[in-house]
Amino acid sequence: MKEKKLPKIIEEVGFDFSWDEKKVWKLNYPVEEINIEELTWHFEIPFHWHGSQIYNLKSIEIISNPDNYKEEYERTMKSDLTHPIDIMWNKGKWLILDGLHRLMKAKILGLRKVKVRKIPRLEVPNILKDD
Image 1 (tube, rainbow, N blue to C red):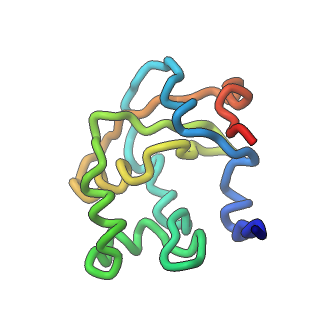
Image 2: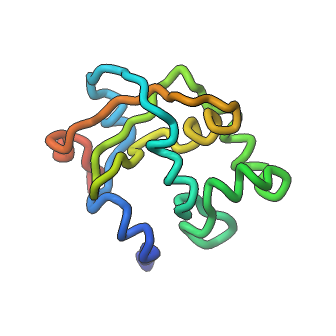
Image 3: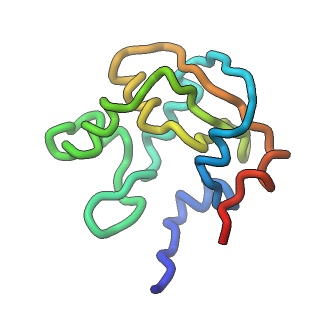
């Protein structure tokens, strides 16, 4: 199977490693609140995929057009806000490791703050995907 090339924007803002969300969940870091606006830049980047292409759909498109992207919107609204969003400092800003749908739901609900866990970069070796 041929590897799908990441779009340039994902390479520019994304992590330079592949991680396993389940390994991230097992980490023990405190939960804190941050202003939602520190993370809403994610909505302008095509982190979702629609149809057969990868990374071709922005969160803002799902939020603004729930009827066009019913499956993703429903997934968003079913997400559990009791779980914090896992973030890591990357290229000058906080980048989500896990929790984009929760962030979207928080925005839709009009929340101004979200619960996060700030995962330090020293954890990268512990969260890498197994090959």
